[in-house]
Structure formats: structure tokens, C-alpha cells
Length: 304
Image 1 (cartoon, rainbow, N blue to C red):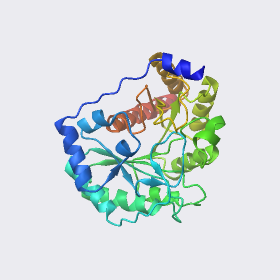
Image 2 (image 1 turned 45 degrees about the horizontal axis):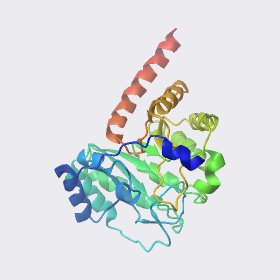
Image 3 (image 1 turned 60 degrees about the vertical axis):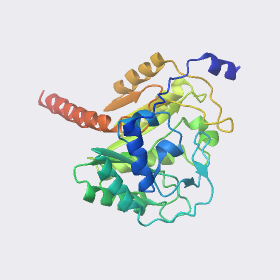
């Protein structure tokens, strides 16, 4: 019955067009021997984003130590050790002339610090080579790594993103190696350490969650003072992955956006093809503008 519902629903249209700008980004990525989440996670927006000369760099290799039910990144025992990756990442950003870059990684539970120092080195190298470029990180949860996450924040990223991914009731099947409240705590701590850093998180829908569960996740994220929420349609990578339950209608995404904004998020991106890094450059500009507006409103309230 669930499969029938999914098949009858409207699947989002994905752009598939290889342009000269797409070829340019692909060439930069290949020459610098970089991994991108665009490729490894089979992102549906890769053609659009690379055509806009944007890409999300994935550091720490292409093999993940987790086995999340929704993700197509390879799982196994990583053999990767690349000390020059921070430098090559910085050079790729410079070559693409990026005004905003997103740096993410696989989970590296095999490393003592979960890869946090490599994040630090990549951010620092990127900023030294590209002082005008704003930097967004999309990090793993650093579960059972103590305060290792603080090393990432020491590098002063402009945006600290960690995706909550789904509702608590689905965690055992969708994110079996992760803990919902540990992810919330990470986001809360990141904001407490640096109030100026924007915090961001995202969820997928269409996995069997209820609307009430989605609203509870929104409340939990606001309690952690998360600034920016992304909501996108789950697209099942293969028959071996967690089964798609249904496609949400665009009007449902709009409804969730309105509700999330009312709950106090500075910015909400909610659409079928929304992903964490989708139009991240444009969204960062909106975040800064919305913070200024929000602060001005708070000052006016205090005066009255």
C-alpha cells in the first residue's frame, strides 16, 4: 500500500544538463583530487549547482564508518590519510572563485577526534587563500568524541551545520549509529560557544514521519537556538536503502515553511529538491540580512 502511495505521488523533476560551467567544476574537482558530496551522495541538484560553479567539498575520504539507511556514500573501514587535502581544497575554492563554500565530510569514528582537526586545517587553509570567501561547514555528530567538535569552531566558520536528518522515532532505522539528542546537544553547544556563528540543520520528509513529529523537531531545534532550517524530499538512492513512503506535495513544503518561520527560525528553505548545501551562497546572504532585521526589531521592542 505504501509503495502504491509513493508511485502515485508526484516525483520532483531533476535537471540533467551538462554545460560548460559544469565541465569546469568537474575539471577543478578532478585535478585537485577532491571528493564532493554532490557526487558521492548522488545529489539530485548536481547539474544545477555545478552549472552555477558551486560544489560541496567532502573531506576525510569517501568511505564512511556509519551505515545510514538514507545515504549512498560508501560504508566500510577508511584507509584514507591525505595531509595535503586542506591545501588542495583551498586551491579549488580559489580556482572556482567561490564567494561561499560548503565543507562537509564522511563520519570518521575510527579517528580519535572524529576528524575535527582536519576540518580546522581545511577551514584555515581555505580562509588564508580566500580571505573574502565565507565558509560553511556541515559536520558529523562527533559522537563519543568528547569536546572534539570545539576544534572546528576554533577555526571560526561562518555557518555551523549539522543535520538532524529525521524524527526520533525513525532513528534506529534511518540513522542507526547516531543519537537524536546528541545531535541536538551539538547544535546547542555550537551556538553557545559562538553566538555570531550561524547554526543550521536539516530534515528529510517522506520517510513515514507524521506532521506532529516534524513540528516537534522544529521546536527542539529552536530550543537549541538553531538559526536556519532546511526541509527536503527524501529520494531513495537504491532498493537497498530505506524505503520511500511518499512524495510530499509542493504545497505541503510551503505549509511547513510558514510554520517553521512562525516558530522563529531566521531562515527556512523548504521544497522538494532542497538539500543542506542547495543555494547555500544565496541563503547565507539572506541569513545576514534577516539577522540585522531581527536585531533591529528587538531593539525597537526594548525602546517601547
